[in-house]
Image (cartoon, rainbow, N blue to C red; front, side, top):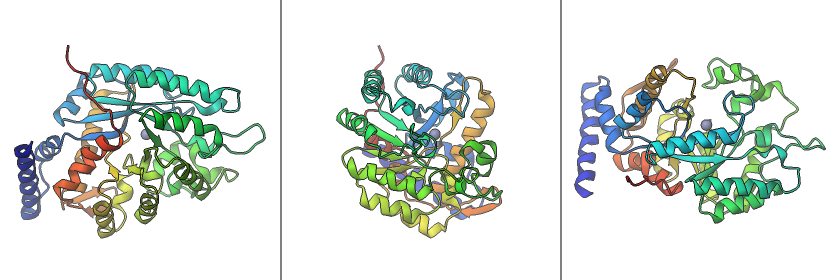
Length: 364
Ligand SMILES: [Zn+2]
């Protein structure tokens, strides 16, 4: 173990030193090698496709996944939990456990008698099939309304027995609650989230002023954290505080079992002041999980997806691990050049710690 770590340190140091010297982009082959040596985990992805092309990419990068199921009625392929559970389980087995999975539930019938018990039963069967976590989604707080018209919030008492159950079974909660601040603002081509809200007006809250404010939703999320201090919670997408690392820091200080993943929000870090982000990533090195939110549906072209995923993995690595210039749309930013021990936490150790139970299935 020690010699492997030593090789890793030497390799990263050489890679970073080489990039500093030359001022030329590090070659993608070198990035791949450095990344693969960390045995990285992408802690938040959505894969429903067993294409060998794609699994070869992950094998080449030595990458494991947490494959996340989520119910979103506005997103084709995500309408129901069960088919996603079935596919995620199939891929979990096929990958011999390298693609861990996170189950979910549809909260829509929360006002019907016995709904929490039903959810617990369903989740229990996913746990028996190896699910390591449970996801809750932004429809809670942004969309679902009671018969009386009030919005269902993440701290609603209906969720308490479910969250207690998740905690009692030693599982982690992924909470995608609220959205980027851009959702509550007019479309802005400069925002990293421009194309998403252009394509998804249902989630563009600026068009739905009757819905709760972002602050109201995050305050309800914070009350959930307050009331379940022993539950491990991953705030997906930088906990929807993507535009200000200081806000994330305040929550991480207040809630010791709360961490965040970087899924689909690395560009939000890139466009904040470099030294501030670097200080944040250093101070909270035990509390951030690398993740992408990359999606691969059964109907997607695996070749195109592989190219896109590879580019994103390499771009992110360049940003976190080197001091090279990273180009993101009109922005040119200098990489954070985080030291190897922090990279090891960001890319693997934190995911193992906060989402435990990711085990390989032993070969027969
Ligand atoms: Zn996601």
